[in-house]
Amino acid sequence: MSIGRENPYDGLSEASVVATGYGPGSSAKIGILGPTRMDYPNTMAAVRAVARYLSRILGG
Image (cartoon, rainbow, N blue to C red; front, side, top):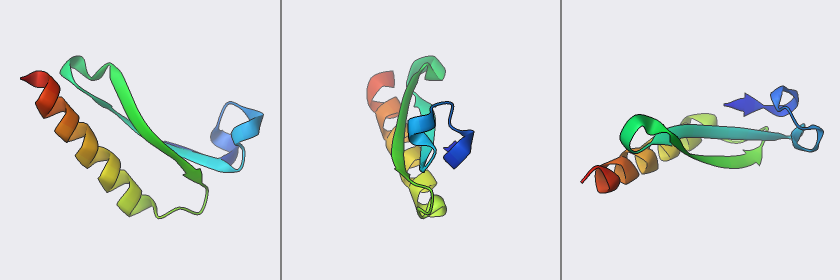
C-alpha cells in the first residue's frame, strides 16, 4: 500500500494504491487506486477477498 506522497510518481501524490498478490507464487498483483481519504479497512478487505477468489480459481 502506498498513500499520497509515498507513491513514486508525482501524478499519484493525491492518490492511494492498495494492492496484494494472488495466484500461485503471488507474482501477479491486483489492487485499487483511489483517493487518499478512502475507506481503507473495507478497501483492503475487498482487495484481499478478490485476491483469494482469483487464487482459488487459478490454483485449480
